[in-house]
Length: 324
Image (cartoon, rainbow, N blue to C red; front, side, top):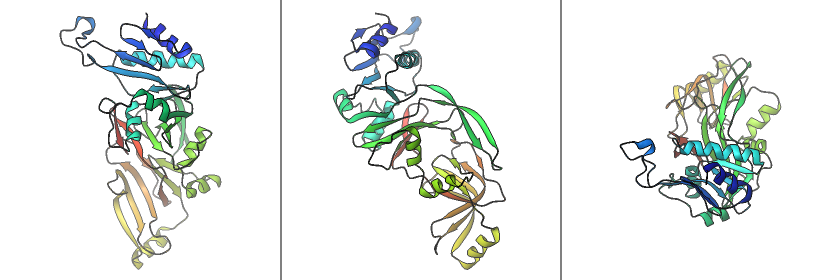
């Protein structure tokens, strides 16, 4: 059977099928290669030889969970065929790298599907698509610079969605502040109820101070899990608190324990009513260059706050789930 026909039958009618390298059981669509696989007569055996790679799983809610992990050709081509077929079928689905599902399933102890695959029956029972994906596409992202002027760029997305893993909810999305095409992440939402929309899911990540600032029209900006809120504090006010000993002034301050987001200039409160608050100006950069630099400007001080996610997993190098 032709690969495309196997894919269409699995998605549209739930029937089994067998192609050369693409096959479908009742609940799993997968790609499978013989151990001695040598495409186009290649002298050396291809790394895909002997592997069985899940492309999509039919979950217990009858929605489809599509494997969005990065693969080389020809698996990447099969993934594209799956997404195109799904978009024409109008069936609800979620696109999530299965490595990230494993990371969420094991609380980060395992982060590779090949090492710790989840049995299909458990996956069908314990994972669900809460807010479906719109598929793989490019989307326009509008950001504001330090002067509040809008700037638009295109970001590649797997198709933002919300999935349930056991009794927890996760936002699967692409962070537009990541370098290049953006950075995929799977973030656990701090909520006991499923979000109704993607906007609800993104808002669940925002602390109250960010939501309040956005409500009053403030130009809140973000790099990864850190938000920057403009304030009206004068430099003299902050430095007075530094002289009083309730705050410290630092250059190249790294946010969080074992963090990777570095502030060019910061004032950190160690005591008093603002204890724990961090104010910054200059450039917010990622020490591993995984995010675009965020220029906060040198005039206004920004209150820098962390989002309120629980665990978060990113994809580095297209395949390995890691903590952010």
